[in-house]
Length: 119
Image 1 (spheres, helix red, strand yellow):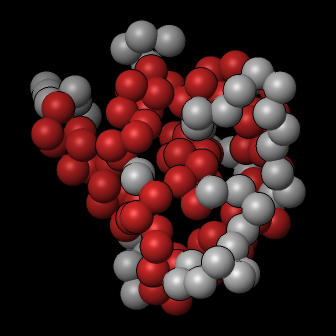
Image 2 (cartoon, rainbow, N blue to C red):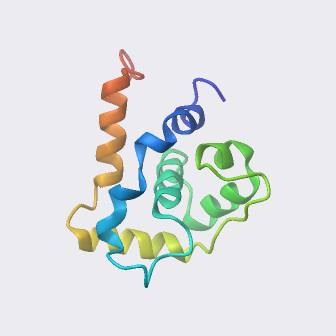
């Protein structure tokens, strides 16, 4: 896993998407998703990298140990319903900062230089 996108996410998981980054999406304790937004953010990054559908991303999070490690899930943690991706993306769009996940990923890539000399 070292040197992979999974390892990169796992090593930087806490700093990449701290819970406060999504506080504006859930201004009250009511109406929060059953899965922390940061888990959805990590899963979204992997979903896009691997070009997976919502359903396939959830299956990977349920069964693939690399996905579990990158998203901070334990061996016996279950995944979630794929519809949570839709709810999460809708809240991102309504926030006026739809691209915040990938803006942050670009910031970390630039800071670490992990892709220096690559495309």
